[in-house]
Amino acid sequence: MYKYRKIIRGVLVALLAVGVTACGTQSSFEESEEENSNIIVVGFSQPGAESSWRVALTDSVKENFTEDRGYRLIYKDARSKQDNQIRDIRTFIQQGVDYIVISPIIETGWDTVLSEAKDAGIPVIICDRNVVVENESLYKAFVGSDFKAEGEYAVSNLEKLFEETEDEDDQVNIVHIQGTIGSSAQIGRTKAIEDAVEEHSNWNIVAQDCGEFTKAKGREIMTQALEEIGADNIDVVYCENDEEAFGAIEAIKEAGASYGNAGGIKVVSFDAMNSALVLCLNGQISVEVECNPLQGPYIYNLISRLEKGNAVPKITYVHEECFTSENLTPDIIEKRRF
Image (cartoon, rainbow, N blue to C red; front, top):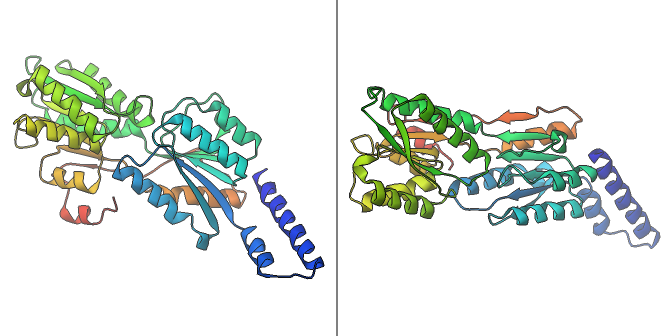
């Protein structure tokens, strides 16, 4: 149906051009309208710009959907509110865009608005975080991270750090700073660490709270944990993104406690932003799991295939890696784009 939308738009432009010619006013206006009729319009809805990672994702999409490539991108920032994001999607539908790309704030609550997009014949691509809907035909494809696998990468490396502490008397106490509750990243990364705690009789989550993927909340939660539990009774802080890790590290420093590979609290983080990798290389962050925001090329390839009438995979996971000071080099960091 979305193919027909562009055909209809082209017919309307052609009719307008005929009308202008009949009045004897052939102009550059007609040429620009004919040119614009071939432009593919993509509406892109982001949760916000709360971190360098989020900005990198936005930039990656913008770089791929340019007018030189035959696209016009309409970008909307939901300012971390799902209601805003749903309203923006409805605006895209009213504007008659050709495709909608959504990075959803949380997984649930999308059935109605995605049904409206489907009824309008507009294909939807989900990126970054996934959605949970009753009918998966409401969206064409998902592009993003395997967040459960990310968490398992972190847990696997955490096990190596504490492989000599399998005795039940050698407790591994973990402060868990979660991301935005209900987001795919939070669900997958939380599942991994909670499963690991069940599997290891001497692993304990001694504090768990939502850091909202922000530095301020990460610092607040870690400060409270240090005051209530004490640095000597905390072995790991498991942060579900780099911003939270930066805040936790600030709190540890302010408390005068030690951290990192040299001794003290081990910091586990996700995203692998350039600044976090520097801390990882220096041994201040013990485990750093990549969450790749450069998803623009993946989304572009999917839409290009849809434009040709080809089928696309329902799920596409982006390439990601896990870093420690042992496999990280200055050259890797220098080549990072985020």
